[in-house]
Length: 201
Ligand code: FE
Image (cartoon, rainbow, N blue to C red; front, side, top):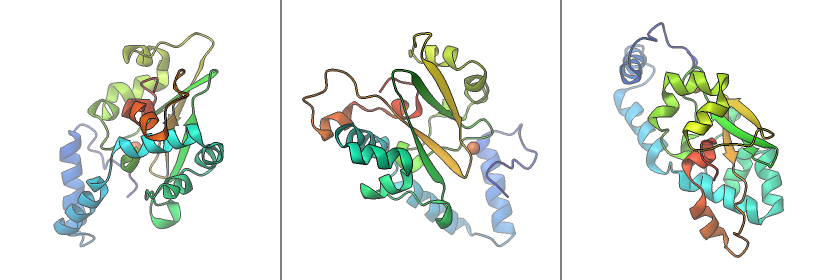
């Protein structure tokens, strides 16, 4: 069963759907309750937007790292000691998309809630909401404006639809006037929403 299969329970709240899936895995002998708990504990233990922020700040101060980040997100995470398993290791391909003066990026999972949890921390409730998932594709400019991100008309918006195999992180543009700041201070400027694309940084 792929992460996008809902098993026909689209009308149930997410938590109930997740519990039903767990029960089926346990009933089928594929995983025990303890194994699922241990997996979730591992998943969330070090999951924090501080991780994605460190990657962004490093890329602002190190051109070679920026190149790696934009070409191979999994390798760029590993370079900072962060573990984001790739597809060959049961994980996903991490694609990092950079904001520029011409393009603003925003991530969404239109089908469910795929998201690079280990780098951004647990996803916010609105990311999983039907309104965000449907409207971000249809009217991204209006959605971003509701988050307080108003973009000039000549800035193009790229919407990246995540899947269980490929997940995205936005690389915000380095704010102006930060030339004197070191990497750690720069990382402190980056927010979770900035890494989703619903904040400027
Ligand atoms: Fe998803």
